[in-house]
Length: 204
Image 1 (cartoon, one colour):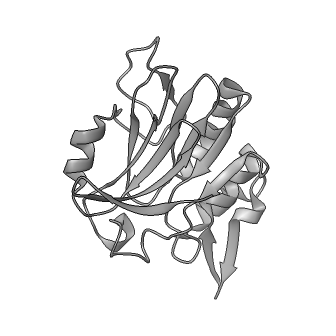
Image 2 (cartoon, one colour; image 1 turned 90 degrees about the vertical axis):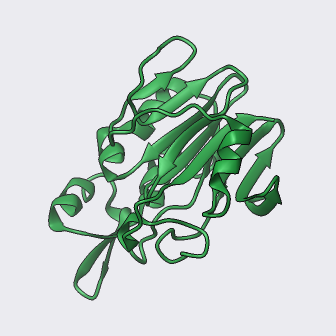
């Protein structure tokens, strides 16, 4: 059970389904058709640890969404990591870049959800995500395994950091594609693209 590439209603996207949950990661092809069909709710993303419960809060800014309703929640992705959260009562989605992880967005989500499973989407991989010493210094204490040294340069593994926070046993699957390495599917900020990919979660 893992991600599969789907062609449907003119859209081409990756999908992971479990029971009555559906998680989607868009490709470059016919994104608008996907958004029209799914009608996702978005926030203004600011690389924060703010998670908005749309059932009780009307905030428009943050980097995580949670709901008990039959809604479609979405985030916009350049190279950061989308984390899809699934539980009996809630669905959620997180926009996880290095700032959000260091700010505690994943540990905050874990406290809010308690009993849950999660799925990881595509992101820039440690093959391409070169970082400077200031980011290394932030990660080396709690996320040493997420720092990779290659040819005297530092690279960051976002997925390793998130798995460390959320636990391996509750992860259902991961879309193991690097956004920078796969221009046939994804936009990438590190590649110079201005467009964004979309990560969506809903109950089916």
